[in-house]
Image (cartoon, rainbow, N blue to C red; front, side, top):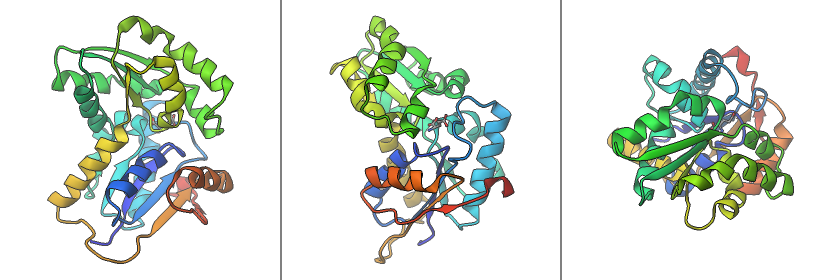
Length: 267
Ligand code: DGL
């Protein structure tokens, strides 16, 4: 089935998931929406995150998507359960796949989770992890400055290293051996985080497992794209299109020539 996969995030973070979908599902067309006018989601209230997520999904549905990936931990944590039954289209989040990947990655059962304020407050990673492995110990922390650092492109920067040290210092006490990057923006900071945490801590990026689960879902529903045509990737944002394009071009395996601006409040 040729219809595209819809992918959305509050900004550029979901590109880490889109990139993984491109890699694992190279025949699938993608429509990406980044809500760059309203980023960050992670410090907003539950009601606002739910309203934004509905609008993002409503917009993607106008593109006749066959499945939607919520490439945002915050929306996956706070809105997904609440709204997914309102839609016919299958919707997959990143939190459950992330928890599964972390449960597999840990050897000593001590897992760290970092994410936005809303994701950490929701406790959803803890719930999934405890279902998979009841005896694990979990330590979590919100890192609200990471998203603006990424959105500003401060990926390799002394300021970023400083803030990483400040947020993650307390994890050193807990002997974690796996750290969930529970926000799709955070894989951009992997180098800095890995330098600080050291080689004994595995960084878990939920994107890989999410793309894997997406593939399973498409197979199960018999809606994989078996066509031979060149794939089409369309990008939409709610603001700051040039900034988004240059960011996307710096990290995707393809060239984004132009993205379109959407007035998301209309959906
Ligand atoms: N990238 C998103 C996440 O995974 C949202 C970050 C934000 O907008 O606060 O949580």
